[in-house]
Length: 376
View 1 (tube, one colour):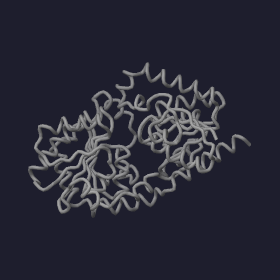
View 2 (cartoon, rainbow, N blue to C red; view 1 turned 120 degrees about the vertical axis):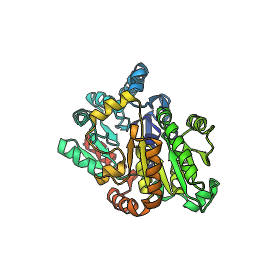
View 3 (tube, rainbow, N blue to C red; view 1 turned 90 degrees about the horizontal axis):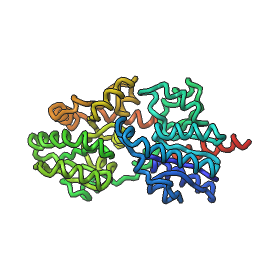
View 4 (cartoon, helix red, strand yellow; view 1 turned 90 degrees about the vertical axis):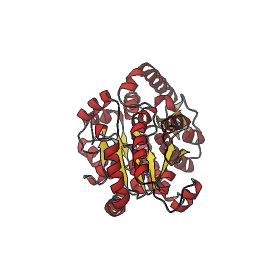
């Protein structure tokens, strides 16, 4: 089997590697071409370009790097048209991938997209572009398929990989010992994001929040996972002048959440991870002013945190832009540390059951069926 693949971020690379591994078990001769990271490289992909060149933040940053991004997409198009895979799988990165998928499909290639864009949250008009771009949309969350069915786009829910992935993590006690934390003290995991722009926007206010919390709760410990060495440098630069009991670790964001009593984090997939780990949380997010002005006007949902989107109500506090300030963050974090287990976690249990697992096998089933239908 020949599978074209393009993952533009680390999260997409993880998903792609899981699917490729399952397909390799079924098709020992699986061949890969496209763009990805370390996970897909382990499955045999030689990436056309470094994946991190596609990881951009907000709306303004992509515009600044538009010539480079257009060149990468043109070269990816040429590669796939020359190679003619059985199926091209775009993984997340919808602004980049959907245009590429539409171009490939127009030339007769079979295309699928893994991870639905948040058309249910903002820019719902994108569904028209999706209808021309993909033969099949692979959704991680059950409510997404209903949206596509109503719009006439073939879609299937493949469950969520986090269900199985998180179940294999060590216990809270083991992880606290690993990270040198006091076992009987409260721990707040602080996740300021994985992109440079996110950390630049969030870490200063997170740092001031930790200063105030440490002054009011001397035994409270902070655990901060850095996505990579560059992000670690950003985080440590903010922490350097602050006198707080913070431990910075490399990667291990999920482990940090498992080790914690509560989580302060940016929006995104991490909110789903915290939910599936049954960790009470506060969502706080900021982005550049211009990007916020544009995106907030496009939004059609009240929420950014996935637990709230799934529940269709505010289960976890969301503090956005100016509301994400130290005073409000301290108040919400204190409340969540005290009452989060009884107020948030029972809802998390219900939502996790609705999502379901079996992601890799269900995705491989869907791709095999799609390829078979096109060959028939």
